[in-house]
Amino acid sequence: QAHLVESGGGLVQAGGSLRLSCASSEGTFKRDTMAWFRQAPGKGREFVAVIDPESKGIDYGYSLKGRFTVSRDNAKNTGYLQMNSLKPEDTAVYYCATRNRYSLQTYCSQSSYEFWGQGTQVTVSS
Image (tube, rainbow, N blue to C red):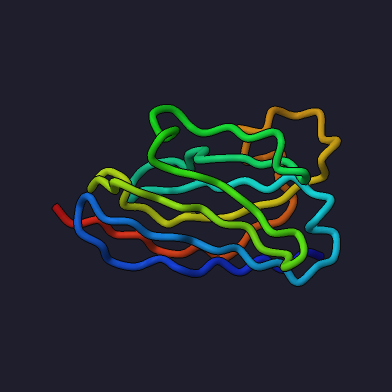
């Protein structure tokens, strides 16, 4: 069982930046696809970003590319989400998740991910 722990959330003013981390305690991290999702109050969980094990396949949710950057350091079993130019609508609980890289399901689907962290709160004030 992969154990994922997010950190780096907090309160930031609009226009500010945060860097989230996702630390895995499992050695399989370097072979897994990793994604970030977020869930705002009263809304469903939304796809944010995905990165493949070699950091060659990367994609972002609608309108997030250019402000958010996903990365990973397999030697540290850690993934990252750099968030710049934050807006109040980015306020949400952010989750990291991993899945087998050979999964046939679309990477935007949260149901395709096997392991999840507990989430970290990001609050952007106007």
